[in-house]
Every structure is written in C-alpha cells, then in structure tokens.
Amino acid sequence: MNILSIHRSLVAVVAVLSVITVTAVAQDQQYLRDTLFAQTDEALKAANEARANVLAPKNYADAARYYRSAEAKLERGRSIESIKKDLSNAAESLRKAVESTRLAGVTLTAAIQARDDAEAASAETFAEAQWREAEEKFAGAAGRLEDGNMRSARSRATEAEALYRAAELTAIKANYLDGTRRLIGQAKEDRVERYAPRTLAKAETLLARAEKALSENRYDTDEPRSLARQAQYEAKHAMYLAATLRPVRERDVSFEDFALASETPLQQVASSLDMLAEFDEGSDRPTKAIIARIEALQEDAYELSERRGQILELEGELRKLEAQLGTQSARLAAQEEQRRRFRQIEGMFDRGEAQVFTQGQNILIRPVALVFSSGSAQIETQYFAVLRKVQDAVRVFPESRVIVEGHTDSFGGDEINLKLSQDRAESVRAYLLANMRDLQPADVDAVGFGESRPVANNETVDGRAKNRRIDLVIRPKEGAN
Image (cartoon, rainbow, N blue to C red; front, side):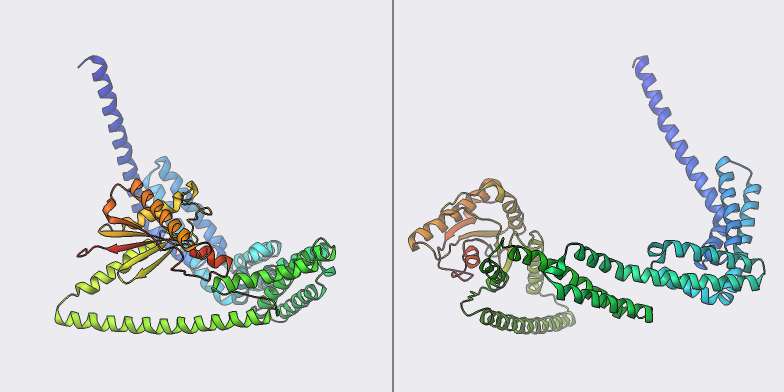
C-alpha cells in the first residue's frame, strides 16, 4: 500500500470517527435536556391544557421567558445549576398561571364563553379587526385578575364579551352570506335580470330571509345556512338561465335549436338506462318511462341487498358451525380468495376504463375505453395504457385461461360483423401474447360473436357503442387453486 492510499484510509477513518463523535454528543445533549426539562415540561403541558396563555397571560409570559433562557443556557453549555434555577422559576410561574386560570374560569365566565363561540365561528378569519380588539380587551381583563384587581378585570371582561359577540355575528354572516351576496351582485352586473328576473328575485328574497333569521337568533344557524345555500343556488341558476337564453333573445340560436337542445339531457339519461327516448308527443311520456325504470331498478337493488344480507348471515352461521366442528372449509376459503382477487382487479381500472364482472368462477373484464375505428381491427397506440392494465389483471390469476371475445352492433351484415369481431379479438390476443412473456399461446383463445350477444339497445347511438366491444373472460384451469 503506498503513502497516498494510507493517507486516504486515515482520512476516511477520521471522518467516520467524527460522525460517531457528533452523534454521541448529540445523543448525550438530548438525554441531558430530557432529564433537566422533564418536570417543567409536565408543568407546561398542564398549563397549555388549562389555556393559561389566554387566561393567565402575565404568569404564562414569565414562564416562557425563564424557559427560553434555560434552553439558551443549555445550548451555550452554561452551568447546570443556572439552568435548573431558570427551570424552577418557569415551573413556579406555570403553577401560578394554572391557579389563575381557575379564578378566571369563575370570574370571566361570560367572556370566556363569548370567546369560544367567536372562535368556533372563525372570527379570527372573517372578523379580524373585531377579534383583535376583543383579544386585547380580554388579555387586559385576565392581566388585571392576575394582579388581584377584580373590579377592573370584570369591567374589561364585559367590554371583551360584547366585542366577541359582535365579531361572532360578523363572522357568521361573512361565512354564510357574503359569498351569496357577491354572487348576486355579479349577476346584477351581468344584467341577468333581463333574462331570469324571477329566479334572481327569488335569490335576493332567500338571502334577506337568511340575514334576518341570523340576526334574530345567531345560535340557530341551520335555517339561515340552508336559506343562504338556496339563495346561492338560485343566483347561479339565474346566471345559467341568462347564459342559455341570451343567444335565443339575440337570435344567435333559433327556438327550434333551443328546444332540441333541451331534450338532450333526457336522451342521455334514457340511453344510460338502455332506453330509447322519443319526443314526438313531448317529454311527458319518456319522463314517465324513465321514472318507472328507475323505480324498478330501486326495487331490484333493494331485493338484491336483502339477498346479500341473507347470504352473509348464512355464511356466518356456516363459519360458526365449522369452528364448532374444528374444521375449515376449503370451498369458503377459495371463494373468499376469489372475491379478494376480484376486488384487486376492480381497483385497477377507473370507471371510464373498464368494467369488471363475475361469472361464477370466471372474471369478465370489459375495457370500455378500448375503441376500434369503423371497420378496422387495428389497435391504436392511445389504447395501450388500458391494455397494460388488462395485462396486470390477467396476472392476478396466473393459473387460468383467457378468452378474448369480440362483439359488434347490429348495423351491417351478419357475416361481415362476425368476421370483424373475430379479427378484433385476434388483434387483442396477439397484443397480449406479444407483451406478456408469462402467458402461453395455448392459454389464450380469441372468439368472435358478431352481433349475436348485445348488452345494450341497438336502437340508440350509445347502445350500439356499448355493443361494439371486447370482453376478456379469465377462466380458472381445471384443478387450479
């Protein structure tokens, strides 16, 4: 080893020793601090819990000054006795502060309650000036009480109480009403009353009722809050109506176009329910049909919920029986594992990317975000992301077969649709095999069903789009766990 190597080794050793020394010193310093400050820290905790900083500001300030002095002396390495003296003085001031808080709790009760109410209403944020003035008065009252001047303390506390109450009311109004008031002001600037005068007037009436209710009883905020929320809604509604009606009034949009546009939302709702909304007799008939379908779905959902509850009860009873017999059900364990994996796959996709279903022991993945161009079976690059998630989902069930199913809508000839669905299924199969080395070709099938298995109404645009799909079925192999 040459001299340069020896020198480098010594430098490295010195660096390591320096780190160890610094760490050891820091640990010793922390231990010393914990030992010296333990009793005073307990006193400080008790004072903070009693809100001594608010109710006994003078004694609390004295304690803070001694405490900071002890910390500074410890940092500079001053004598232990000097540090202990400061900590003793801090502890004594904290003890006096806690005693003063008890007296304040009896003497300044009304002002303390008013302060708590104002703080709960966020007066410090919404009524800053009033809150600051009230805090000064209250600190003066608490200070006079510490000095033993009861009369002056009560006088200042009365003034502080009134200021806190005023700040509380200002904060509540700001919190609940100011946003709505600004919104209505903006609506007036935008001349919304020309297009939606009744709706805007309703917003102003609700706001006035909210303010009156709040002034009459500031502690019952539920009603004014509800009224303010309704007023805000009506103001926004008026602004929306104005934006919608302005082009009609200015003749940028015809009455026919406006009427047709108003039918679109109901059409979309009907489409999501796999229904066809027709307006040749107005909107009453499709509206009633949609309501009837929703009510039927609600009944089905309730019945399904009841059945699930019964199943859970039966499973619970079965587990109890098995526990009593000292046995474990492999079937139930397998079902629970199946449910766990299903939830895992379900969590991989956003709602707009794929739907995941169970079919007995099988899992069906429907990547709704995967779309083919008309008449094409080529997978475009923007859909690789959702297919990568499909790959991850397939890996959740390694001992399985995968069936890629292709489907089309009813438009076009049967033979053409059958071939197109087969070609698209083959494309997805080829993509999976090309990107998953852990997937064997013998374990992946591609089947085209054409238009024979619709899942939605082929009479609607949205329904046909849902029928033009790829489904992937993950099926456990025989004997697989």
